[in-house]
Length: 275
Image (cartoon, rainbow, N blue to C red):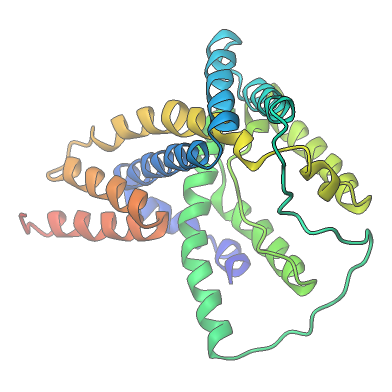
């Protein structure tokens, strides 16, 4: 479904129809979600989360606001802190034999259709939000239709082998001098780790809370401030309210619902219906 939407350019149509105020509000809301997730991780593991956040803040502002250095150094330092404190790190990644790929027989019923439609709706919002955020970090624009095509195809292949949906994320490689090349190299390294079965072993040394610092910087420093300003800087009647509602709904529900609410409110104001 997502690959078809991307192939026909429908994500760009949706993005243009929503407008900059709604899109910026949605991305600002995503920033709040990332910041909240970071705080939740600190609550789960105070030592690792706190060390990760403090390290990330120091590295980010002392090393030219470089996200790659921020995530790598904060992850390593917080993982070392967990090791020094003799914390038991339980890997959430199941151990599997490398190269053991089993094709799953596709089935179709109402539950499958409903789940696919729900995931497609969430992915529309996520692709627009995460694609634009990552493109902004790289100092360029993201073609959301291209993103949707290849992420949709990746979803299909992963699912056929029993894997999870392969969705777009906000990647720190976007801040590298050569973002595309860095992204390709990163994925080649990840492929090697996966096929050699090293991922579960590495997972035993890295607490999941070690990315708390990166998430806080990405959400509260990189994403939210700029997009919130744009969301509230519209000149049309009701733009400030539209931006505020989009931010709030995105933060408390999800990006897709936030975008839909923002668009509906925008249409109400455009029709001359005051609130």
